[in-house]
Image (tube, rainbow, N blue to C red; front, side, top):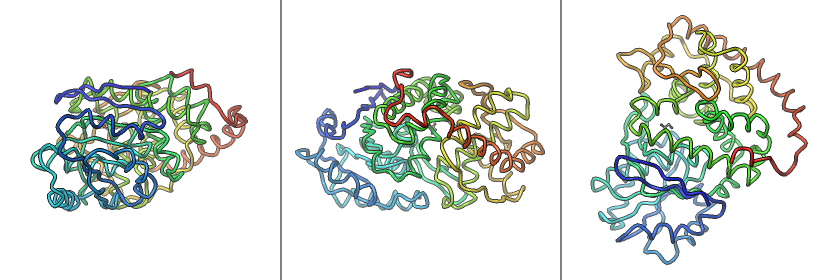
Length: 391
Ligand code: GLY
């Protein structure tokens, strides 16, 4: 089992990561002293897949029936936080309650914000059940909800007491959602981990096949990268912005399409392609690295088609990004694989040109990637990847 300590201004906490660790959730959560009740919050879909395992994991602890809410991105709104808090009151949750969020990014963000607000803050444990949540959103204390005007515009930094990460929970994840998480895995390699990036170039097929050992080691690797970033800049004053690579354009896409067309990772996939081309166009990134980055993003799979966004609308959406200052868009761009620069302002005509060229360039790169993937030696490896290379 890997135990990764995350430094936080409100005390450090641990991520416990291992295949099958859900069965030990009760023992882990009972380390939290004087809990008057364990209140599990999840979604109907997730509960269908792992409710039985989660319920039996908490057998013996004073816990109530799970509170379930729809975890569609469109349901990530303030009204749901109110509903959750009211449900907690009706179930008798007091200040010594422990809220356990079992689910993906939406569940973690919404339940985290409810835990931060309920009685001015009760203890929170994350049990992430999607790849995005396991490697990213369950770590670092970001909680919140969307507004029609933009993503995650209301929220709080509210670190959990503990994260319990079981890669086996990913076995039942729909393939599209699993792939969506892989874009964020690739992001981790691009922003901070050359070895992980190179590993993914060789073993993407093993990841796509969800080889348990490959996946567990890749997840631990990503958690360590995030732990390192959060430990140095929890409040996103500078370094943490590197985690937003691909998110400036990605969030604009999600908002423009009403959170319906793209899964978060897919929008980030497009966003990373856009940021890579911007870095190339502004002379910050070498063509060879840009090509490797695009290939790696596209090796995850097919991205849903880009909508046509009128230029003025796109500009307004991008300017609404949380990293903007005085309406000026500040990009997060790669300067080489494993290294990122934040706060870059790019002239609008160039942004507009790159976004216009994006679909054609990505289509071409996608065709090349398809050929390269079919020829890749790993395509013949059925069972195992050389995961030791990145441990
Ligand atoms: N997902 C980006 C962050 O946690 O900062």
